[in-house]
Image (cartoon, rainbow, N blue to C red; front, side, top):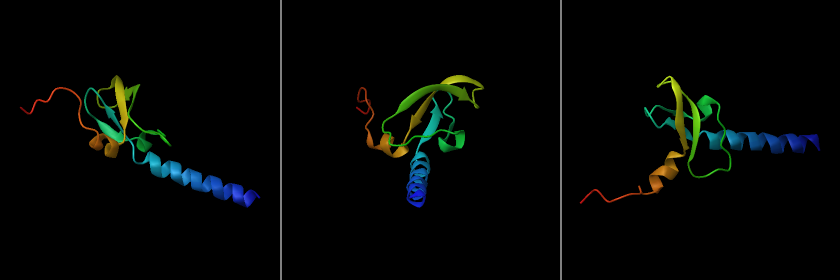
Length: 85
């Protein structure tokens, strides 16, 4: 029984690590960007974009940080007026 439990949690840990690697975090002020996993973040079973307050090593201060998945962001068209005319 212990073997089955450890196998199940082992797969879960690998899934969490793989999914977290897909996410990025970016400072909304200076644009500095890193992998969410590189800064110790975890996103599993999540979708969409999240904003959070955090320390930016580029700005050297507290800033709003955007947590996003690049593949999702590319699929969503930008909102706002059409400026291409």
